[in-house]
Image 1 (cartoon, rainbow, N blue to C red):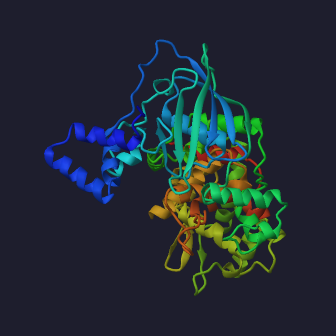
Image 2: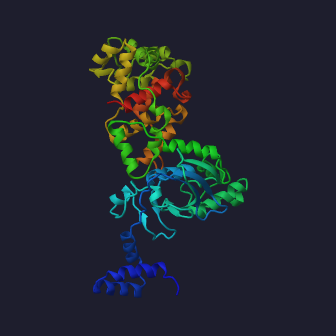
Image 3: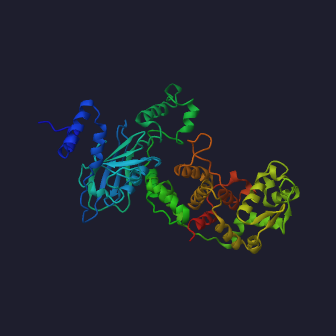
Length: 486
C-alpha cells in the first residue's frame, strides 16, 4: 500500500480529533478546494520533536546547500553540537554570505509544511509554536544523514538544506568552514530566477544582450551588485574571517544602545551585534593626556578665540574677522576653497560653532556668543574637556537624531576605518527601520551632530572630513567610552 501523502496525513490528523461540526467543515472545504487555511492551522499545531540533550557534546561535519542552485552552491562546516539555533543562524548567514536583512525559519523537512521553530518576531506577530532560542543543534540532528532546513527571506525564498556528513567524537572548539563552492546571491535579487539572470550576465563579461530585466543599463546593474561580485567566487579564508566576526560576543553596552541592540536581536537581525563584537569594540575607554590634547584641539582653539564672548552680526553669524581667525588657526584655510571669512559660506567653521554649542561649550544670549561655565571650568584642561565631550554624547533629542548618534558611536567605537563609517551607519539605521526621505525605501543618510563631533575629534578641520581615513584608536576609545558608560 502506498504511503499517505502529506495532505492525507494532515487531514487524518484533523479528523482524528475533530468534532462532527469540524469534520463537516473539513468536508465542505475539501469539496470546494479551499483547504489552505486548515492545513496551515494543522501545521501551526505540530511542533518539532526534540532529541534529548546528549551527556557529552559531540561535533558535526555538515554540508550546507542552497537548494536549487545550479551549479551547486554549498559550504562544508564543522559545528559543535551545543550550538543554539540563533547562533546557527549567525553561522549560516556568515558562511553563505548573507547580510541578515530578512526573517528566517528552521524546519525539520523539505516541505514548507514540515514542523518548524518560531522566532521571537513570530511570537510578536501572533504565531504559536516552539521558540528556537534555547534549542540546540544536537536536539535536531544526531546521526549521519540527518538533515535540517533553513529558510531565509520569505520573499525571495532562499531554502538551505544542512545534512550531517559525519559525527565528530570531539566537538570543535570553534565553528569553521573547510570547503565550499560559489558566491552567495546578492540580497533582494528576486530569488533563484533573479540570481540566475545576474549570474549569466556576469559570466558573459557583462554582455548587454544578457542584461537582466529591471535595470536601466549595465552601469545601473553594476552599481547595484555587491562590489566585485562574481557567482563563481569562493574563498574559505574569507568565510572563516566572517565566522569569527559573526560569532564574537558583543561588548556590553549601556543605555539606549543596549535597547536598540536587543530590539534588532529580537527580530533576528545581528548586524549591530556583529559591530559590537569586533575586537576593537572591546578596547580601552580612556585616552592619554597627549591623545586628549590632540582630540579636543579644535574646540580648545575655538574657545580661545571666543574668549569672554563675541558679539554676533545682525543676521546671527560670527563676525568675518572671527570666522577668518577660526579658519586659519584650525587649518581650514589650508584646504578650503574661498576666502573663509563668512560663516554662512564656510560650513567647516559653522560646524565647529554648531557642535560646540550642542556640546554645551558655548551659548547665545542677547546676540552674544559666550563660553559656558563648563567651558570656563575645563577649557584649558584637555582631559577635563575630553571627559565633558564624552559626557554629552550622543547629541540630539528626537529618536532619529539619537539613533543616528548611537549608531555612529557603535561603528566608530568598533574600530571601523573612517572611510567606512558612513555606509555602516546607514546600514544600521536601515536595519532599525529608518529610511531615506527621498524614496522611503533606500537607506537613510548617516548624518548626525554626534558624527560631526567624532569627525572633529578625528581632525576634520585641518584636512577636511572627506580625508579622514583609517583607524584612530583614540577616537575609537572616545566612542567606546560613551557606549560603555555606566
